[in-house]
Structure formats: C-alpha cells, structure tokens
Length: 132
Image (cartoon, rainbow, N blue to C red; front, side, top):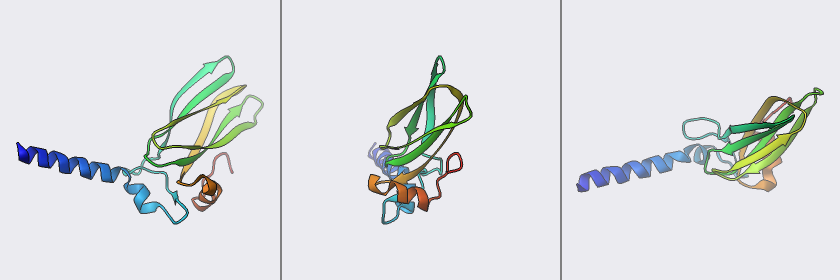
C-alpha cells in the first residue's frame, strides 16, 4: 500500500509542476509570458455567452494559474468594434458586454504577472486583436 501512495504522490507532484511549465519556461524579467498552459493551449477561453435583446455578454476565463492580460473585440451592428482590455487573475472569469452586437467576437491574451507592464507584454508578444 505504501508503494501505491508513493506513486500517487509522485504523480501529483509531477502534474502540479507541469501545470505552470509554460509560465516557468517562457516568463521574462518583466513578468511577460506566452499565456499558454503546459499542453500549449491558450489560457484565455470563451466559456459562456448570453443575449438580452441586442446586448451580448461573454464570459472569458483564464484557465492558467498566473495572471493574463486580455484584449477582446465584439462587433457591433454599425460595423464598428467594441474593444476592451483587462487583466484576469489565475483561474478567474471576466464578463464583457456589448450593446447592438452582431455576435462576432475576437480575443487574445498574453501572460503579464505585473499589471504595470501589460503594455510591454502586449508589444513584446505581438498580441493583436482586430488589427491592433
């Protein structure tokens, strides 16, 4: 039974250390990183959206342990985008809403451990949404 426990404990340690492997291997001196998990999937996910007449509310989730800086754009019926940028703590959600929306959304993120360096990280990792 102690062998099973030892193997289970070793597996738990290995999986917990790999969960932040992308952060550990890509983070730089300014706290900028690639915003991808250990499996190389993007940390930012769209997890829900709802409509109330012409208003769309979209829930964005950071599926990684470390903070990310996100930019989202929701298309409006007049052809213009409604864009916003915000930080999302690890394993947290952020809701963004737009009136007169078409339902088309675009989003991207970069890892940014320090909110004072969001603009640095955005530029360094060439994070673009809706052309900018």
